[in-house]
Length: 172
Ligand SMILES: O=P(O)(O)OC[C@H]1O[C@H](OP(=O)(O)OP(=O)(O)O)[C@H](O)[C@@H]1O
Ligand SMILES: Nc1nc2[nH]cnc2c(=O)[nH]1
Image (cartoon, rainbow, N blue to C red):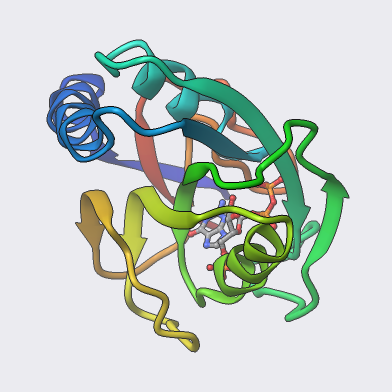
């Protein structure tokens, strides 16, 4: 039987988003800021985050997938959609829902640097240490969590549960 155990409430999520958005805004005053969400999981987080950013910015998405229907990373990151905007000289904040092994992020950082970004900072809703393989620097972290497989607020298991407004551990 599949069970969802509450981990973070809507209120806990939104309180941290406001604080992190304020810090991103302060750090990027006067810069060409591009906020790039990693599809699919970060689509809700990016939408809430950018509405709290207080400086001009542009928005784009990059699609990446390495989990498929499994709870373990395949180790092979596949870009399913590239960024459309010109990144030459831009200051990018790459927005992730969750950093787990770090394999997705390290692949995407290199990709965005190769596309000409002047800087790439990382913003993640969830920092999960348990299975980290690549120590990617995380610049803006909303919540640090310890273990388990997470769903809700954009994050899926086999494409289910993305629509849930809060975050849960899934046990099956
Ligand atoms: O740190 P890692 O171990 O690489 O895992 C993190 C990635 O895994 C999930 O994506 P997934 O491949 O499940 O694609 P999805 O966002 O489309 O669900 C999540 O959205 C992150 O992008
Ligand atoms: N749904 C989900 N996807 C992930 N991708 C990497 N870690 C996780 C996790 O804990 N939950």
